[in-house]
Image 1 (cartoon, rainbow, N blue to C red):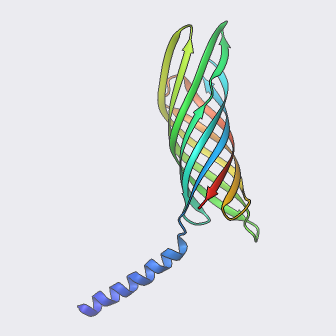
Image 2: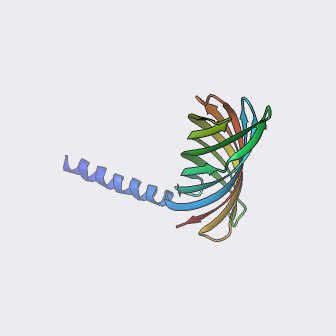
Image 3: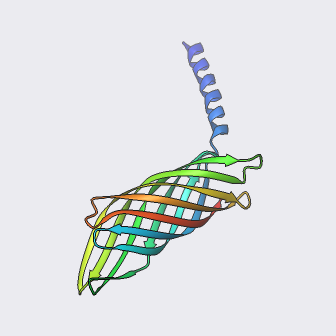
Length: 180
């Protein structure tokens, strides 16, 4: 009985040490500029926004990221009336990286995630709020300037769920991240 426990402990140590080499857990913080094309029922709005992110690269192929995004106010004219709209979003994205070349400073990546979107509208003195989920899917490229600093560009499509006015969004982002 004791031999079985000792054997099990030895195997567990070997497995855990092998997994420790495979996982790197490199946390990072970042910021990015976003250009968003919102396709709503009543208007197509172009909005600028910023995002702040915190994430972890588990190894050179996978990572996850939490983000917060805030847009500027979009001013559009609908049937002669001024419409002001803006949004906030927060959520979780998963990233899959494919390093390129021998030096691996370039990577292409795919991302998928889910986010909560809060839209505010104001027209003719009336204010309206719209809240719902967005399902995010995107792809991009990343360049590692140093071992700790990376620049990335990505394009993303967001499908809205339970948002009354918004159908979908297209997002184009340019950002920088610092890896610890």
